Image (cartoon, rainbow, N blue to C red; front, side, top):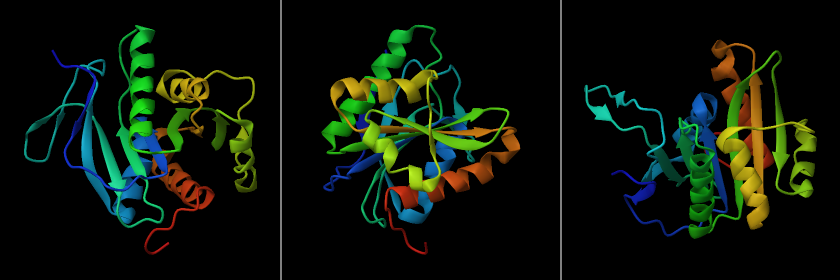
Length: 208
């Protein structure tokens, strides 16, 4: 039986200070664009047995299991780690969400990351980017980029649980939620989110 696991494809020597995890279509697209300009190298697959029961078919007609892909960047300063999690657990059992969130945090520590940033898109009646975090001081650094703190709200799924568990574990973590009115605006909002994280976290990439 498939278990929640991380299959390492290649060893990495660097200890990236920041791990970004893109959840869902918008979050994954943002990190896909980031790795394309920052020299992303695939180094691991995360197998999640609780993901939806479908597979992807590639351009050659081959079946591809629905996994999360882990990358590190070669051409950014500093080097960072990127996790593209296009799907969330489909199980109604909340324990599965907690298990996956804890697994991500444990591996972030394993690879020496001292800051985790989650990225996700949500459908809403207006567009914008809001943030929540494991410590108040982490939100202060985003104010100059006109990112408002999310107050007295609820965040469901991996995005919320990763940040919530990180607070208990004493890990610095920020959640960024980008709201969109229509799915057609996701590519544009993804570019906006990418520019934000490059600026806010002082990441230099070629050509930008």
